[in-house]
Length: 79
Image 1 (cartoon, rainbow, N blue to C red):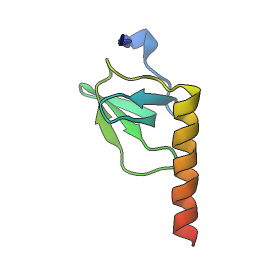
Image 2 (cartoon, helix red, strand yellow):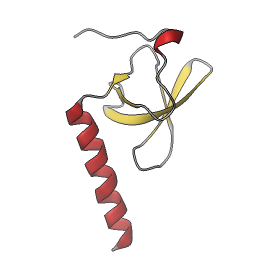
Image 3 (cartoon, rainbow, N blue to C red):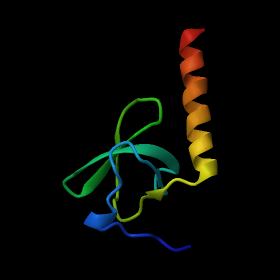
């Protein structure tokens, strides 16, 4: 497996959906703070720190999974 490293030119835009292989989940890119990329779960929630050299754009399957999880969590709060 290859890893894509992000340079300043490749820094994701705020809100871009990226995949963190260490956490094993997709999240919305928020910003870079110190040496970390800050990601937030799709649909909101607590941010987590990720290695910016390891994150990559989420695949369509990872995007769908994250979006379905967010909808299910939101529906669980309503019930």
